[in-house]
Image (tube, protein in one colour):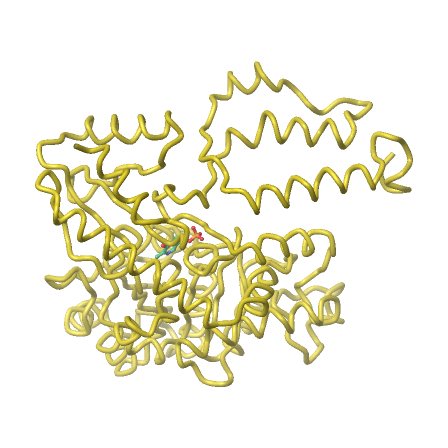
Length: 454
Ligand SMILES: *Cc1c(COP(=O)(O)O)cnc(C)c1O
């Protein structure tokens, strides 16, 4: 039986179950995990079948099913040669503490229920706000990911613009470049807003000059937000934030910065100057589950003036009055969603354990590995860089290869459980791409993958 006691039958003896769970977690975090590879659904039906039975299989058996049959079919996104999409490479402290967060069953939507957790999450948000040089009043919430972070910021932006608009105008246009993340387009669709595109400059960036033309074309009173990207997903390009901010200020338009991947670079003094202008944003996101060593799923969403977000997002209902009428900080008031886990706590714990200097070193280290990858590509006659690297994304071509060759190379490395590096496409061309955010990724790992392209 569940509910009355975990000890109600031998299947569910808590001591046995916790030993199995903790041993697994400890080993998974301590050991370098294999890369693993997926099975098809038919194969899983064949090997695992249905595990859910009327009597229950018991904790030890359920752990065995996970350990032997399920886990090996899930890629280790923290593997040092997992360089696709954006990997996730949590610190040991962050991963371990995620177990504690799970066990604690904290409701982190309100201060009333989760005071200490909300307080600690806010310390972590404050560290990020300080990196971006946002004012003391800035604040926000940890959301499940950049997609919800961007959507929540844009909902706050549109709500604010409509409150301020002259009678008869309903601002409904959001502006970005075509290098912006797909979640911006999907947010516009969810909101039934129009997405207008700014042409990029020669370096692939949004600039104030190009932005101004689009704002004027659209009609400034119709535009509720401009989204600049601080580290595009495909190339790591940072828009010209300062000139974009100036245009937003000139027209009184909400300035949102999507730093889901690249925002972590704020912690690296060697590249901090590229983010100048970010301090003028109205909202900003960064995913600690990307390049700030936190486990899934964790996006930090920060507003310059949180009261504007609260006005847009607070849910009103009789049963919630005791929360919504309280003066304390309720994270749920700052994004889409009501119930939330304290998903910022593993990140907070790791910051507290390791100190922020360790974050600076780790981000700088991955920048160095990316520089090494770029140099290795340049050094090899059969490879060619597509574009100079801004952050830790390196995009390059194998001379003489067609799309099939890239796929064959990528599939073979996964089949061997050696590396997970999927091709990308840019302007119709298939290319190779590394995204390096894992401090464990070594120069040897980079050489091994490039050698496999010979
Ligand atoms: C990854 C990414 C997102 C989406 O974040 P999720 O956490 O995957 O929802 C948004 N913007 C950029 C620039 C990204 O790299």
